Structure formats: C-alpha cells, structure tokens
Length: 108
Image 1 (cartoon, one colour):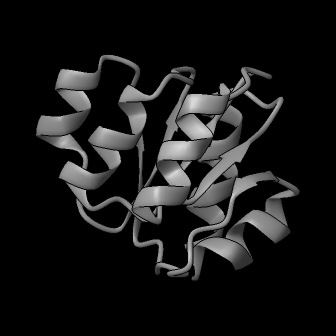
Image 2 (cartoon, helix red, strand yellow):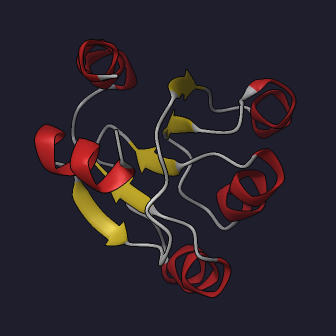
C-alpha cells in the first residue's frame, strides 16, 4: 500500500507530502533515534513522538517510507523545511503509536 493511501485510510494529517509516494511494507515504532537507525527497515512507516529535525536524518539513513508523529506532537518549522528539501513524507496523528500500529497491521 502506498504511504498516501495508508494516510488517507487512517485519517492522518499531512505535514509534508514527499514527491515520491513510497510503498509501505512494514511498521516500526521507536523514539530512540540510534535504535531506529539500527533496526527500522526500508519500506517501514515509522511511528514516533520525536518531532525535531533529527527525524529527517534518520529517515534518509534508513530508507523508511514515511514518518508519523504520534500523540498530537507537532513537527517544528526546521523539521518541515528539511523534509521538503530531502523528499521525506511526514504525517501527524493524535493516536498513540500502538493504536496506529494495530490499524496498520490490518491494512498491509
């Protein structure tokens, strides 16, 4: 399923729609960036409460499909600007990571 289709189905708010609409093949939940860098897989949609510019770097390094900032956290301007420059798709949700992961597991 494409990231945009997943976002629409789940009612996610689009923060930045990357130019590339990536296929979502899995889901990874994590907030410790070094752990995400070592364990997230290419094609995963990443669920996190982190909302700072460092998430952009992790997305590039891991090859994830998109980031979802959960629990009502909001990406700052620097994060959005970097995402636009690096073609990273970011969504936001008020849901918990667990609630979203359960829904995602039924869809992909």
